[in-house]
Length: 353
Ligand code: ACO
Image (tube, rainbow, N blue to C red; front, side, top):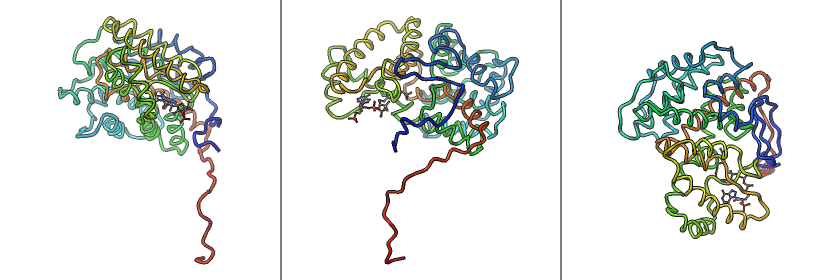
């Protein structure tokens, strides 16, 4: 028994393959670096959903129409934090297993994330433009201006990089929910709830907090040493599967380098990364700890002007494609996920019985 189910194979999938020893991620036959360079969000949706949902001739237009529908259904976010607000927005999507539900969930993720970012900054909401791509429109609704082509392609690269990743915690959660035939909306909300935690999709905001707290490369050694001595985990490092650098970190660093405003920040982040890795390796010599996807996610999303509190929602906007594909794949097995537990509690009280 392993509480983390590390060695358990709980699904067969055609969607993605994570090779932790080689540092390789293949998504439906494509290396993640290639996908990040070439595929827009809509291409990734077509790739992941193929065989699981009916094909759509004009997917960008279908997503555009769905964004307009979802904008009209946005809830009042009240005092909810960002992921809670996205959860409330996704809860407005009717449940079901069809293409319409899938489109609405992906569209709602982008529309609500942009609206949550605007609300956080006290700005009025901007309605979708269905003629734009999902990445371009999400940035426009979030920033209140037309994004530069390099910004749109950076967000596409980010979403391609995080669209799917084997049986990670949120995807497993989505598959468990889907296995009960609860519907795609329930599965996606289940996935989002698992993504929220700081050990999974909640890490990139704290990565920026860490970089801000360190302030300058010369402070890194003392700051990191003190954090590790307190038993804290360094956000953006370590992974259950990867024993070498997460290949997504490189795909995102490459996308980041293409953004004109990011140059100074990259040099600073690389210096901190080097110090962190030296210290982690010295402290955990028996364990290969390396940089994970969240480190460069934080820098990329920051360079795109997204508020750090909204980073997890932007992660969900990409991963929603994988959650949906996995949910459909699980439903097609017609098998409910129901593992066993070993009872280690008290024996029944013989006298009381
Ligand atoms: N900083 C400091 N110590 C660490 C870190 C870290 N980032 N990662 C692992 N360790 C330590 C653990 O404390 C553990 O030590 P212990 O046995 O004394 O408790 C040892 O290294 C081995 O840990 P692993 O078995 O490699 O970690 P596990 O597989 O349980 O957890 C996880 C993986 C949750 C990602 C972990 O590395 C972590 O907490 N990282 C920081 C948070 C983070 O960046 N999360 C995003 C992950 S990527 C994603 O989900 C999209």
